[in-house]
Image (cartoon, rainbow, N blue to C red; front, side, top):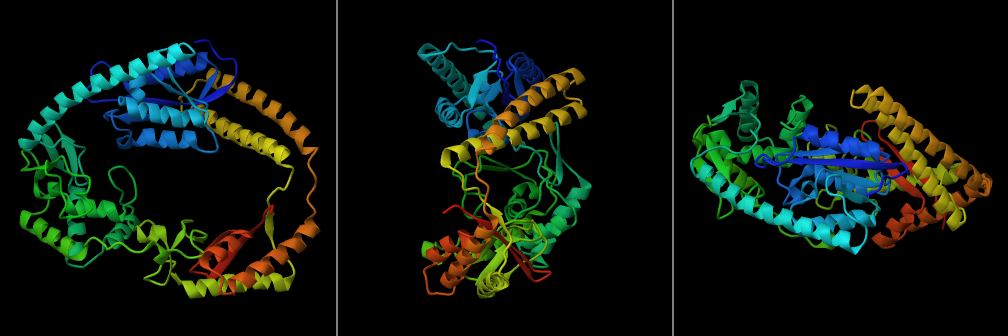
Length: 490
């Protein structure tokens, strides 16, 4: 594998398993990745790490999923993805091929710094053989591990990360007093004060209480806590995929035993009482016809407090902030659909009457020229983000001053090259006619208002409003509606 002379951006990925004694530590893997990146003219944008997680199922690796999503995004933040070994990327050959194909389509190459491959068909064949060997090793190892963990579960040993209210100790779990009091409060407010899951989540978030992962509480995290038998002193293992969604659903292979070293926070009688109440209140909803959902303003209206989308509920007859329903937003923004429709039409009509409208200009340049300009602008933005990240890496002590200067020199040279190309292209672009566009924008808005006031179908109204509107921000507190218009090329 030859060294590259072209400046490339990249992600690093590190995975370590608790049972694998042959792999390097996270620090060792990171050092190897950084040395390789430096030697091959690669600026590492970020290094993702999954600790103590098997490589057989990608869906169970949160850092891996986040990395793939970012790498595939239209911003194209990475050209390469570096791993110590291909087994760190995946131990499942089918998933390995799928994710590598997805990355390849996005222009991202997966490289193993310790397993260089030759170009061409022979290199691809060797890569498949390596993937097959990794998968065979993983299958054999997972069978041994699973047998051991199943036996531990039957003996009542707790084998997962400690849930809220506990901390892991060598022989089991230990109660964290402050968190245990919060757990008791959650159970009490659910049974005695009849707090719904969403209200409990909002209650916890408003008091600055965070989950063990440092995140916000949601409906599902509150429900999981209330249904976790660890709080009555039991260890649960091999839970079915649907067991946490419905109190009645569980895997036939699930093991539930009284914990060997799990001190209870809630009495068994009280815990079972809560399960009965959850089963009574939260039955599986019946499937609804798809045509009963949706509104022509759907996903267009945003909450002024948190910026989340406001979703339409046919049952409630209005819109509400989606994060408020999950307990993440503290301010209710409910507004009836009829009132919101009237407000949108009224605001657009006022623009028509005033003879002036504020809007953003969406370029309408020749197709090829516009594409070239867009690519260059995106590249310039990515370089700005890279510059911020390498500076942060230096300030945080990750990179030395010499490494920071080298990376900054490479980025500045690339910025100068792109700036020259951009200047050449922009000189050829026609200047927009602001007066003509203002007049045409008012004509378009007038046509949209006519459609919104008509008996046109929902789909027609949806396309119409989106032809002139980028987003709508509703403020419950100030009773205002801000419509952000855009002049689009037709």
